[in-house]
Amino acid sequence: MSAPYHLFDGFGIELEYMIVDKETLQVKPIADNLLKHELGTIGSDFENGMVTWSNELVLHVIEIKSTRPEADLQTLEKAFVRNVAHINSILNEWGARLLPSAAHPFMNPFSDTQLWPHDNNEVYSLYDKIFDSKGHGWSNLQSTHLNLPFHSDEEFAKLHAAVRLILPLLPALCASSPILDSQPTGMLDTRLRYYKTNQAKIPIITGSVIPEAVYSEETYGRQIYEPIANEIVPYDPEKILDPIWVNSRGAIARFDRGSIEIRVMDIQESPAADLAIVNTVVETLQWLVAEKSIPLKEQMNIDTVELSNIFDKTMATGLATKIENISYLASFGLSTPSTVADVWKNILTSIPAISAYQKINRQIIHTILNQGSLSERILRALEGDFSKEKILFVYKKLGICLEENKLFIP
Image (cartoon, rainbow, N blue to C red; front, side, top):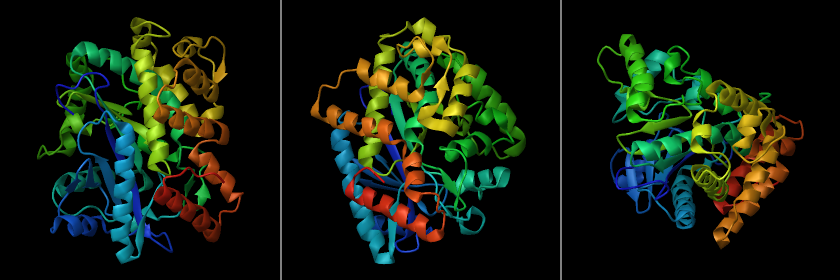
């Protein structure tokens, strides 16, 4: 995303899906064949109008993303739905389909992983050499990324302050990774547990996931990019890695593109659910940037360690997580200890839904708040039965939700 986009002028959205066998749901490493089907040759990107298809680290994942920043998210949602249908029609020829959710429930990452072997694979190979990319935290995690524009240090400061505040609340709304190796993990957002730890060999890359309280390009470079650059030197003698895109915080600043990318959202069961969450995130950030609850200076001073503590709790216990920090709660107009569900409800009460599309999205968010995150709904549907048959039954329903662009309701 580049100039002349200013705050909230447009949004870049990326959705990652697994490619699996239609019947067994075993992962199928054929993303390169899918792209070749449209491109005529092996390639990384197929631009299909408003939506572009791209490869990822592993061959069983395909990303579909907005080709350019879009302001009309309703139209973008429809484009995502059309592209999902198009992809599924191609995959059907190979007995495959797309599967949503942030983690495959029974994939063995050590035997089933195949890395992308084509163009730009030197980066993937180096990551594999440093971190071993065959664990769950590398080859079995799918997310939704939201790119938000800014066009100056002043705009960056406002946006970065607001993004830091909302990050701890997102796992509760977005969690969709409760099962690994056919067993519940005890966490609602298991993807983020791996996200926090899969690069622990070089801790500065991820930090505490919640980005540091820095509010200018110069400070960001000095406190984040430069330490990353220094730490990766022993692992990268050929200088393949760039600290700008090695940075793996939960929200990363790309001054070269003029955007902040939020990376802590598990992908949902349908574009309708993902776009409803994206719309809610955007509206909340606009509300914070407009200083409707507390001034910018106070937003900037919220402690990173406390934000990280709240984030860790919501990864595990989701909407039921109790927040005690009153200064943080004041950011969202609350003055007493509250659950994360209460925080989201107060946000929705504070921000009026005007358009018909906003009202549809609000209905979806209220359903999530009342029925639970997708992780909670998956667990409820499994009813304590983690047999292969039951897991297949539930996750095939998720595939149908993706095809029909509907919410999963057990």
